[in-house]
Length: 541
Figure 1 (cartoon, rainbow, N blue to C red):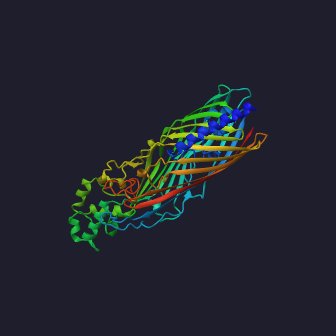
Figure 2: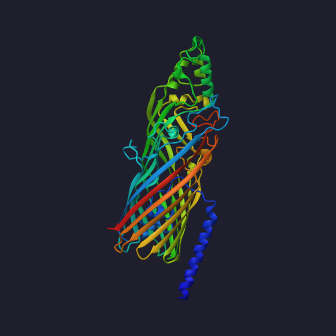
C-alpha cells in the first residue's frame, strides 16, 4: 500500500511539473498554419498532443514508432468533416485618397456566404460547392505473431484549405480569392516500426501525396498612377473625346471603356495545378519506460513540391481599350514602348504554368503523464518551417500581356507572377487530457493556442488565418473484441484588425505595390471560424 501511494505521489508531482511548464509556455505559444487540423480523430480530441501516445494507425503520421504497439492485423476507417468560414468588412478611413479618387465602392461592405471546396485527383476542383468539406481515411496494419516488426499504410489529408465565395458574384472578397483550394492528400504511406526493447520503439514512414492547388480571383489594382491617369483622361477628353488627342498620347482613343479607374476590375485569373506524386519521409521514436510516463518525437521531412497545370487570364475591356487608344495616336506608341507596354492585350490568355509550393518540415515532440490509473495528460511542442513560404512564383510558358502593364511598377518579367507571402516559422504547444470511465470508455479534451504563421504584414483573404484557439472534445469506446470507435468535434475562432497600410499583401498604398494590394488604403476587420468533426472505427482482421 505504501508503494502504491508513493507511486501515485510521484506521478502527481510529475503531472504538476508538466502542468506548470504548460502554463508557463502558453503565453508565448506560437502556432502553425494548417497542419494537423484533421488528420486523426483521437489526435484532434487531444489537441494533437499525441507523439508520446500515438493513436493506433494514426501513428503513421504523428509518430511512426507507435505502430509497433499494434500486435495484430488491424484496419481503421475514418470520416472527417470541416467547415471553414472566413469573414471580413471594409472601412474607408479619414483622408482616403487614391490618385484623386476618394470613394472606394467596396467601403462599407462585408463579405458574404462562404462554402467549402475540395480537390479531386485526376479531376480538379468541382464547380459545385459544399456546406462542409468531407474526407475519408483508411489505414491498415500488419503484424506477424512474435515479430518485432509492424508494417502499415494509411490515407489521410495532412493539409487542406478550401474556400468558395462564388455564391455572391458581388462579394468584395472576390478580388482576393473568389475560390481557393490548397490540399495535400496522402494516398499511400508505407510504414515500418520496430520494437527495439520493451520500452523503446523506432519507426519510419514514406507518405506519398497528391498536392492540389486551385485559385480563381477577380483582379483590381487601386494605385495612385491609375487614379491620376483616370483624372487626366476625364479632364482632357471630356464627355465626347478630344480631336487633338490623336496628335498626343491617345488617352481618349479607347473611349469611355478605356478610361482608367483605380477601383475597377481589370481582369480575372485562374490557376489549376497539381503534383500527382510527392513523397516525403517521417521518422519517429517512442520511449515508454513506465506505464505512467512516455516520451515521443517525430521529424517530418518537407519537400519542394513542383506543381504543373493550366492558367487563364481574362482581361477586362478597360486595359485592352486603353492600350488600343495609345497605339492609335501619334505619341502614344512612344510612351507605351518606353514603359514596356504590350502592343495589344487579348481578351484571354491560357497556357501551361509551373509553381514550386514547398511542403514545410515539421518537428513534434511530447510527453505523456498518468498521475492516476484513469487520468492521463499529454503535452506536445510543434515547429513548422512555414518561412519557406516567402513567396509564390508562377512561371508561364509565354509573356502575359496583362502583366506587361505592370512593368512601370517594377514587374520586369511578364512570364512570371510573384506573389509575396512573408510567412514565419512558429513554435506552438498542444495539450490533451484523457479520462477513463470504466474499462471501455474514454472521454477526451484538447486545447491548442495557435499563434498565426501569417504575420499582420502578410495577411490577406487567400489565407485569412489569425491567431486561433482550438478547443476539442472527444469520446472513445473499446470493446473486448478489439473493436474501437472514436469520435471528436473541434471549434476554433480568430480575429484580425488591419488598418490601412498594415499588410502589403492586402491594403498598402505604396506606389509600386500593385501585385498585389486589391484593397489599398482601406481598413479591414475580419476573422475566421473553423469547425470540424471526425469519427473512426478500427478492428482486427
